Length: 195
Image (cartoon, rainbow, N blue to C red; front, side, top):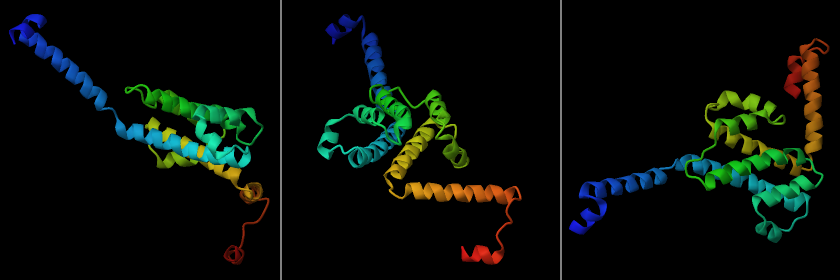
């Protein structure tokens, strides 16, 4: 014990150093595992649908997909002409956030990330509807919502009837606007019952 105290310049200094080491380890261990899990789940959710898209639309074999990183999969999306190409940059940002958190225990989805996702033009109408039901001050929740949006866009791209659905929705939207502006009369009660 005397040698230990001598090496550290006193037993108090030894205890202080051990406490510092222990505190650092506890801080690293006490990371926000719930938020880390939410980000990882969201990233995996996007990757699941990205894999389905690459396999179905770009004819990449499942065995080939297993060998690719998320970044490489997104690059394949970026390089080929397809309906999701415009979202490839933001899909890359999803991956950057997850990678940043994977390699730094103190990293988290931040307000800059949340603002980036909210600024993506295709996401704005989706977010406008969604924001009334989520905590806008939680950047992780914005990340989750954006990942859900991307997965939805991929599912839409995989749906062979999506073009028909889009055309019906546009027609309905035009009719609603026309009724609102008085260019069409509203449906009567009997007409709404038959719809």
